[in-house]
Image (cartoon, rainbow, N blue to C red; front, side, top):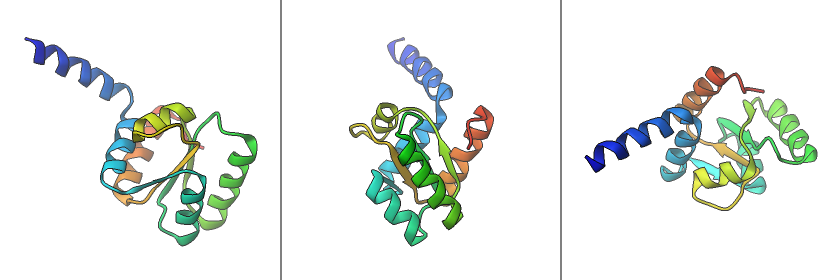
Length: 119
């Protein structure tokens, strides 16, 4: 009985925010780089397939990543806040992250299009 209730709560949580679940999976698989410097390095090296920037990041950070992603032709989206993104990765707050795997990037973009939060 206890396990059934737990599974039900987990299913509700996972359905509510699949984007954060996919970010967590990418992090565990080692296909995610977090932090401003790592995100910038992976984007410039061509390894980043998707860049996610927290909605509450500074305007300077948003502009920097928006311009960089436009130049390097990497999709970018603004999602969640710093604390939520960091928590999804099992770290402290993070303003930016890069997804390095095409499959994870496609899954996240698909979910974001469902939420219509894409930049």
